[in-house]
Length: 495
Image (cartoon, rainbow, N blue to C red; front, side):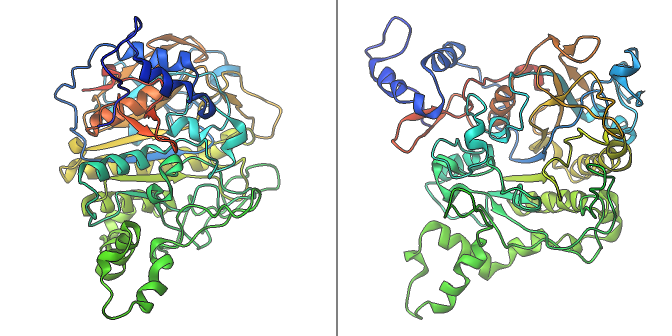
């Protein structure tokens, strides 16, 4: 694997002259010298990769855009004043001494399979999807809305695809290694799609293969804002509805207009029809070969078709777009996909999804928490029953948390952005079982024990997936960048 290494002429700080030349050019990509020096210091001593290295053969990443509140999920504070804890309380789990939010009863019954982290922290209370899912060292609001900006860092799933490509010598996979469901992030609200889950500096070749969902939801979701309610498919869909391969990535024809680009199938379907009978498929680029493979095998279509599952299984996941997308994710993993991302995205308004500035309690109680509780618990139990949990890493992540102090002004109240302390949940693939990492103060507003960066979570995920967290990837000029920025392996998270 690529490393930040130079020639044997090492300076007093451990860096070589060649390293300094590389680092000198990183400022344009948001990495200062002190950032890399800090990263180098953390990794000065070789890490004992240990028995958990490479335990995860695949990963399901659930991304909750907008960011859930820690108080109503995995860090309740039942003894706090009502203006902090609010209307919702805590319940015990099946692990003595661990309590979670009272609207997560099914997750409470599987706590012995999970690791909860209550001490995530970073300095950017913004919707930094790029920051949450890549090694970029800081939130840059100028490029968060520009998926094809040259300063973007590659998505974790794209890096997994890239390293697997390197490991296999570019061998054509039977299934795409990097798939995202159910639609391109940000494509179903009033704004152009945001940056985040793309190949970025590695090129469009490493973008996820996206699906789309073109049907209307069956159920009117609680209002995002007064008078702004939508039939959100994440709350309900028809049993006959399906995902389809129609989009992956974005066109970058102008700075202000974005549109779904065609899927691999669409991109090359015409090329397939126009092929000369004597033209060899091996002359195609790798991406074209992948597309041809998808066209001819039908394996991808079959894996995506959750309708092939028995109805009791589908109902166990929930007849929602989130539920059926998680079911499709499990099917893709079984079919050989390495990294599947399920994006719980905003629908209708950008300030939707888990971004509960308005109608906080209505959306949590009637929509967000019940759907997540139902589906996430089903996914974990299904993976376990099939013997897949130990080798499938499941990460539930978001951009930040929400304010300790409830905003009583909006109808239904609200919690605003907060990144000084927040919670996440993980399972499988070598993650610990039945324990809580970190502690916050009495208001869940600041970390008191074991602060963990989102970059550390990425580093730990790479470790479990068999990728050295100290690895680098090349920027467009060939200079090495650390795959998790300043992140490092956190053994506290491992079982």
